[in-house]
Image (cartoon, rainbow, N blue to C red; front, side):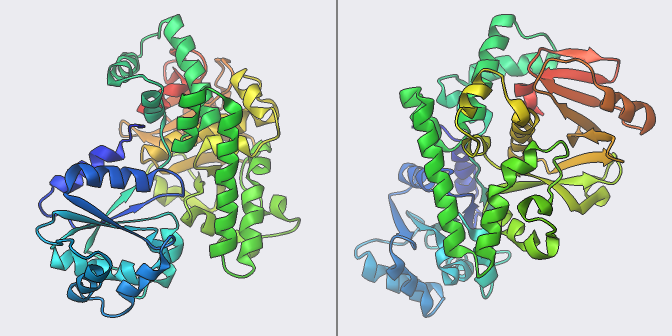
Length: 432
């Protein structure tokens, strides 16, 4: 069984005597159902699961009266003998996006309190549009992503002691021993290719066969396509699919700013902006917004009309590339996708650490891959797939634009460029 961080988050939620009904949101196939059911089996006398996609008949439970008494009366017909009292039973509402009435009912289930309730869905950002009354103030929220690099290391058999050992080098800004550095870079490249989808990681752990991993990833991509066909409305189906398929081409460009013309010549946000938002709401992509000035506060300086788009799982991005891309990445030969893949993985790592994504560009001559708030400062982050220690753009930002701290993430070891730019192994992004 793969160890997931959300297990600890669910335990903390359960231990809070004032917890409410919980909504766990995340993209398809990130492991929500397995994690919640495993948690329920460990902490409750029984788990009652209502999967609204597998059993549409469960929707009738919430289509009449939405008060708790009516809901539990209906539940007793489907699950005779289950004692929904004293929070001994976990009621798990899975794929709740297929039953908007159940989302509204979470308010009354929280107020009633006789059973703990966890709701989960892969397209909740889409389904919220159909909810007549969202239970604001009556639910707790939790997000689940595909596995981050730390979870991947756990899956590969490395424990907390190894992660703490690596964190020590980060904290001290100390050179990582060559043998350790080589091992970590090999694991990092494997993570880039495998990604964090639990089924893909488990397949790799079990077989060490990248071709089998690729088949899992392509099956997941096919499911994403099916979701677009099923849940997108009208012309949005074709547009969302076109935006989705354009992502590798977008990231292969010298300027990685999303261009609607790559999706369709002479196109614009008016036609495709809603489709991109659909992909974001479905948990498939992340936006990285352009800053008008390289300074805090980032939200106040962001231009939301200009952005880059990254896949939320880099393994799935690699699976969208042409045959042989896995081997090229493992060998460090990324071709035109060199910058794209490494930028995507760092953006993915930052997002999983809860950081909003921003970049900076000035007159098409100066670009910085990311800006993050680090130790209270606006910190420039440059991502490189080679060990080149030059940092021309970052030095320009420091000398001419008031930036006081820069971090360069690369395959090499710790070091410095000047007195304000730190060089770090790229996998150390998990600690930023």
